[in-house]
Image 1: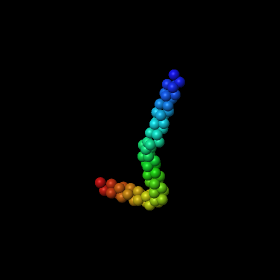
Image 2 (image 1 turned 180 degrees about the horizontal axis):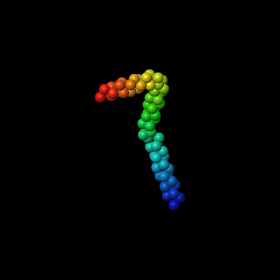
Image 3 (image 1 turned 90 degrees about the vertical axis):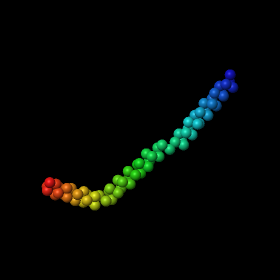
Image 4 (image 1 turned 120 degrees about the horizontal axis):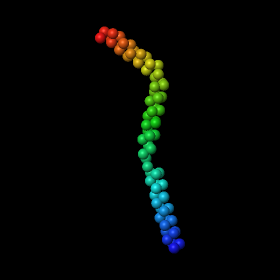
Length: 71
């Protein structure tokens, strides 16, 4: 009886150890980290070129406004 209990305990421990190994090997979270890094880079670029982007957008809207008056 005791041998059965210890054998069942060993099997259960092996299954739990296998689950932990699978969790540690899982790399599905890597895509989340990659997306966050890309987002950080984009935000940094926007902050660095904020004035130039603002001027560009204003110029584009001025052209749109001036050319839409002719339609």
